[in-house]
Length: 198
Image 1 (cartoon, rainbow, N blue to C red):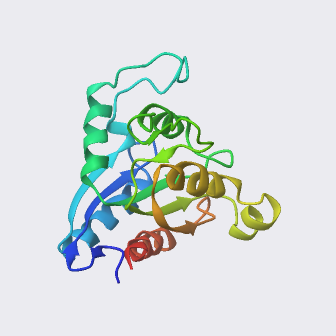
Image 2 (image 1 turned 90 degrees about the vertical axis):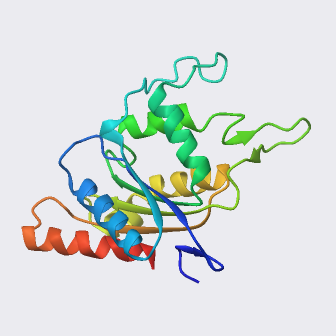
């Protein structure tokens, strides 16, 4: 069964470009993935992190509730609407750009993405039944990222963020090194990124 189908029902796909820059390889990939999904009859909502206005600093943690800004409220509605997620992001200092991490902090709140249960060690995931794919760009060669650095961010993202709130069928596609790659090679990466939907 294709990533974009749930039995005979087409998926509702959120493509989130997690690069805070405006003209980036991640943007090109996110747009290509959204285009490829639409050609398969999928309803798609494409969101660019650079277009979202919100305070990325969850200053008081969960001790004091911060109301969502309009852009976060709209994204929360899209997250509930969607049953598939493709996140496209660069790897910065071995993890996520600060604004993307701040988005997770602010958006995936108790009562929305998970719920604490009295007497239970682990919360209940509230976004269950959804599937996710992750596309990562980096200047670090894949073998270095995996074997020397231990691929830490991918483990955190998949296990402690996405799976924690209910996403399953998690798969990752990696592109790198980006620095120094020719325009032809970058174009081929953009095309290949769409195969994350297979």
